[in-house]
Length: 275
Ligand SMILES: [Fe+2]
Ligand SMILES: [Fe+2]
Image (tube, rainbow, N blue to C red):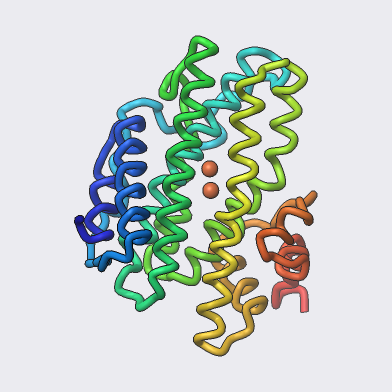
């Protein structure tokens, strides 16, 4: 079996979405089997690209140029599924990227188990969204998508704690806040397969946020720092806006993120000019 960092690199360098996610799933299965058998596994090292390979479509636009469609219309529902597919493909790359980029940091093998498992989930999520789009006569790449999604990875390319704070604990946690509303949109439209797919995503995303908070807390424990304070400092550094309620407090609690982590970040800090 290849070293894990090499597997991560292979996935990051595969452009086509279905191919990328098939490779991601194959490697995750190999990793899981080796771990189950108690085989020796090698993490290895890698020098991942700043931008993973992506298909030529969708066209990537700045968020203000991505056309908005009425959420209640069939076109609006396709646009919503397309946006989620794009998020899931980014998530596949984000999880393999954290493995490849930070594998020089000594971490228990359980860290890699968690991220391989999350990457495998995201691969499934991408394919579920693609299947739903195809059922509705569309496909991933048919519409423009958000160009800014890789920004968090670039900003935190040299900051492991920043990456943990921003990706699972802010961005994926936000997914827990907004997914129930999306599920309602598809329930109202009686779109059964989209409801089932989004329910799978919703259930599995809790564990990704939980992996983030688990390893963030682990690292703070190792460094003897206060997790809440470190989290606030990093989110204020990398997220250039306040966090937006309402929050899914129940699912966030399931994932190990208490309210005093996120509520203080809904308010701007008074700057020195105001003092
Ligand atoms: Fe996902
Ligand atoms: Fe996720």
